[in-house]
Length: 184
Image 1 (spheres, rainbow, N blue to C red):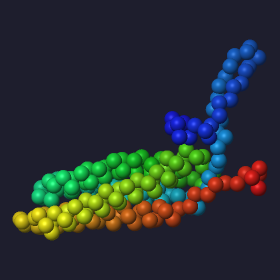
Image 2 (cartoon, rainbow, N blue to C red):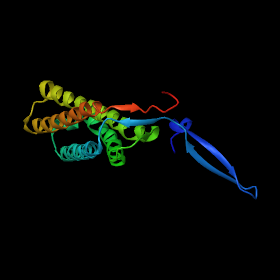
Image 3 (cartoon, helix red, strand yellow):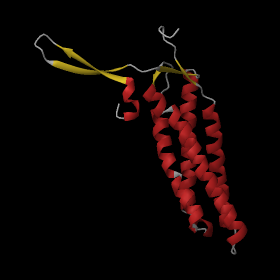
Image 4 (cartoon, helix red, strand yellow):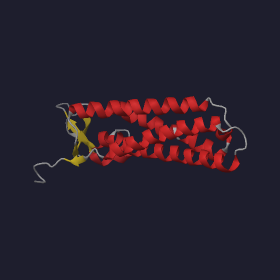
């Protein structure tokens, strides 16, 4: 419970023993959530995110070793570098993602399922901006051999497509608030 965002979902409970010593414990009092996937679906979902992250990360690292004129332009370089921040949070959320079907607490849903949806969107946006930047460079400013820039464009385009498809598939996973006996 290191996030202040979820502090209202927890309550500190004080217990006293027979000698009068105080013992503090934290109990979860927030809502519980259900995910629309079964256990096999959760495993596939987690595996899909780890594999797609690995492919996009490998593409980004490989493109970093290319020596093409387009990658030395600021409006291509900044989104290329910026995509590594969502990728970092993507792998953290994907690794922490549960694979067992159960009721999930608010902090688990927020730091895994909701975070994956957000960072895949951010990665797709940054990759898309890099693709647009390299296209603009190739159309208007490139006067040399465009073969290396086409390779860079192809790699960024593949990474953009993977991130976008993953984001669309992530949006299809529904997270529903579990109704308790008091609400029914």
